[in-house]
Image (cartoon, helix red, strand yellow):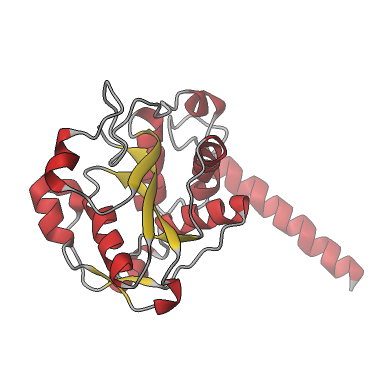
Length: 238
């Protein structure tokens, strides 16, 4: 039995070497052979620093509420993002989201951890932005849930995955303008879990563009009795 186990281990190692030779690992950011997320791409990350709009987190020249938030009056306590959605980070997020490279959630999730160490948010629970069940079956995983799970493990803040649901399939936000995005996700989320009533929640997603999806998630959570909703994303489009 021990000899059989030893042979199996040897064959697994040989298979790994063979596959690596045929399909060498490439960096998700620059496509160079080597690490999954290389040191050069890590160093290129453009961290999002103040001054920011205190509500939507958009970078600007002062710390006052921006004109867009004054007009829209968002219900979220605030949106924060770790870095700008550009360069190798943008490419890596696309690989995570659309190319099945779910192992990137560990590498990219470390950016959220670093942000949290520097700027923790006053919350009790972490909730990922959900995918619709049909899209989840198609993709096989929810990238927001993977990132949220990494953050939960690092901070010790409980992760609640099944309280927030996407009640209908929506058009990809990538193709829509700001006003169209808000219409697209209006009433697209629901939260029937009343156990979160009185809790402070942070909603986690991969990218914030206009904040429409995060705001829609916040509305569903507030209707369930949540008292505070922040949003945190890996990257911010500007």
